[in-house]
Length: 423
Ligand code: GDP
Ligand code: IMO
Ligand code: MG
Image (cartoon, rainbow, N blue to C red; front, top):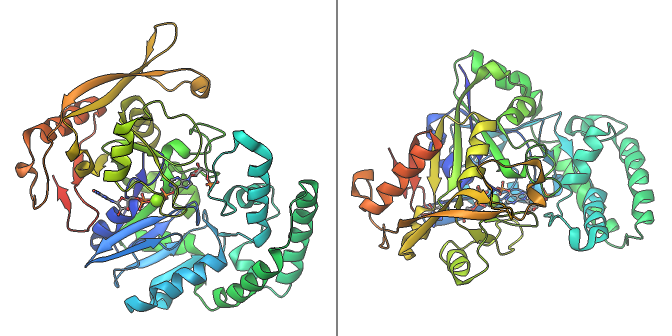
């Protein structure tokens, strides 16, 4: 059996949480492979709206084993709160949720360092979610991080203190206040005691044994490909590989064992935080998209920047991920427009048009070249079949498929589980 991967092709918030929840009944395992509490994955069903940050989005389906993989950076305080918030759903998390011993721990000073680094960057700041992601991955790569398995060892406190001292000297270099630290540490050690009671496992065996036993696994990506540490608009990126390859390293699965790659994109674009966004709309059209799509961050509540769909960027993401099926989200948000634009290329100040994302994209003053299409400009409420879509929406889907060379197998027309049209 092979492992399927589901990931965002833009700058995150494409609707991954919703779709993992929709597809989950077809799987026996759902596994997160990278990122951490910077993610906010929203699920809506039976009139309930729930946002998950670190727990995989298969948690609401009782037959599914949810794995937090080795590639994840985990905040114990947030994990404890997330699990407590599941209390009202009668979920047996001790049976359905396991954590890799090799996942990296976010300690309180990682969050202070994140804030200190951002403050020092001034107007060049990345717009981090300030959850400690960058500093934690930095320590992982620097070989000084703490891992979940360490909580079980008798010298965990000593290991913690060694890392704390290192962080304190950096924070003092940045003159960053430590007033909040004491309370953060209290919560941290309380959460560590809780983590010790959870099933902590060698998840690479769990995943490969499941594949061997012909169980179906869905790997759930966080963030989006344009925020990838290697291929995103560096330095305005997150600190992990958000692409298909990240699912291999973040779970211990061989590349030859990757099956379908589901690439999720919004029918338009959004981005939170800083960095290039060629099709961004700074006008009333962008404002209307934000309002209609309720484009405010699930983790930080920040307004998301909005703009038209960017084909060169989407083609790039499809290329680096080996996407086999596309899922188009939030089509309903475009209901309000009489005309819809799609960026097909970028025009440089020299007049040259390019269809690729070059290294220099951050500095290039690239203007989008648009194709204008007729909008459907009507409600999609009550639509249950693709055949019922208005002609203009079908034309939009067909045009994108032709351009992207990958079938669009699913169109989402609302936040609820049931507002999902399969093709
Ligand atoms: P994720 O990070 O990729 O899981 O996405 P988020 O949960 O951060 O953001 C997606 C938002 O759009 C959430 O509020 C979802 O409830 C909502 N959403 C998902 N699919 C649709 C859709 O098809 N239409 C509309 N209007 N909202 C959607
Ligand atoms: P989900 O999984 C959207 C963005 C931040 C910032 C940059 C770096 O919900 O799609 P970080 O905290 O990782 O150091 O922030 O990445 N970012 C996201 N944007 N959705 C996310 O996750 C994001 N996670 C990080 O806004 O620009
Ligand atoms: Mg999100």
